[in-house]
Picture 1 (cartoon, helix red, strand yellow):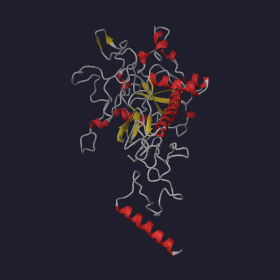
Picture 2: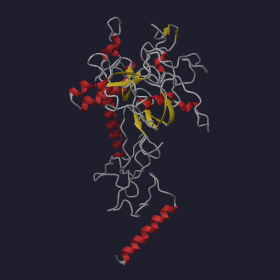
Picture 3: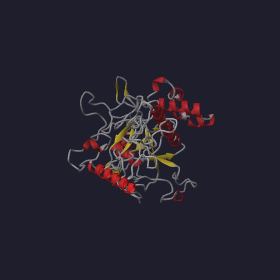
Picture 4: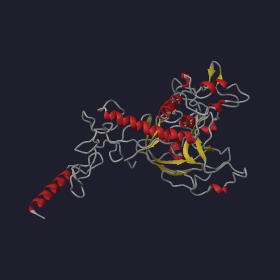
Length: 422
């Protein structure tokens, strides 16, 4: 090795050492040189390290800080299912839609599916509006109007199966990332921002890279990749544990500096009652549910929850995470396949029940009509406009075939919190 190479290595090493003195490297500030080899990043032969200021903010999502909690129902098991006994778990932080996916959101989905896909795919994406039909009820107006009439725009979409909800999540992921990439390519127009920008620093040409990192392709368009940190993770259905954890919103019961949770919520709010005990809205119902046999809304002039069927997705107070209607309005699909022993056969970190793991479907006699359980039934939670208060407790759970739909089940999306161990 000649003298010039020794000198170059000495200079690189000195630069690396000086970088270390300014503080340890981090994801946002990796430095100009590798902290293990001293090799410079973003040179012609060096590794490309894009500027990273955190993931873009996903439209419609709110941050759910994770932690330890007790999942399961602490109430009397009136259905005698014994399928959600209490257990302590830890759930990692994630994002969740602040409200249920509404009719207007589904109509937007249908618009682009019809525009970009085949008629067959479009027909597959249509909700089943006949879920409103009843032989002994005059629900005909809902069959014809609920999905498409402007007055119902921000009511939760229903008649959507678990499979259709998953297809929507896939489409939404692609469409949001496509939109964000387009905004960046246009040179930094207004967009949802988080932690310093959409894709990091931009110049007039829309280059998201900093310190020479290759953030654009040869045509000047922003590269969308995991390594660049400028793409959103997948929108998806929340796991049952995530959904239940978010509905509990126990963050609202915490006292500063106290690591213990000394009570557990029956509903997504404090107390054991369904009415607001405070302020100007004292006495008003906190959720849209069925009060009793034949009582969906109360009497004229003094309506209780004010909704015969579903309701505006932002009605009723949000819980302490800022999530609306985590009890009532519509039940919501979650990712998990249903098993009565999910509480027992589980991990205690980010529990999730997937197909084909323990408690095989062959043990359930569905062909002989002795069971409804197989690997194609999914959990739904939360209670709805047509359920009594018992089902509004986050610990209750029910299941239905993944290709089925009703007028009382909708959904909301979730997303992981990448690049963080909290």
